Image (cartoon, rainbow, N blue to C red; front, side):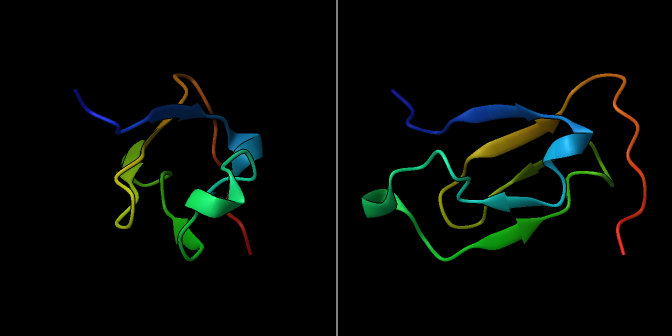
Amino acid sequence: MSDVKEIEVSAKDLPLHCPTPEVALWSSHPRVFLDVAETGHVACPYCGTKYKLKAGEIVGHHH
């Protein structure tokens, strides 16, 4: 059984970082920002959580 989570995100969730605020503090790792906009999906290098951009989401450029 896999403990890897898959989370669907929207443009309003960007810039995306892991862990997200919903993660319990005791189980967190250093915050890492993830680029989901380029391919529509990304996995956290620390915990393996997979993030997927919701279908039809329009992503603008963040400065």
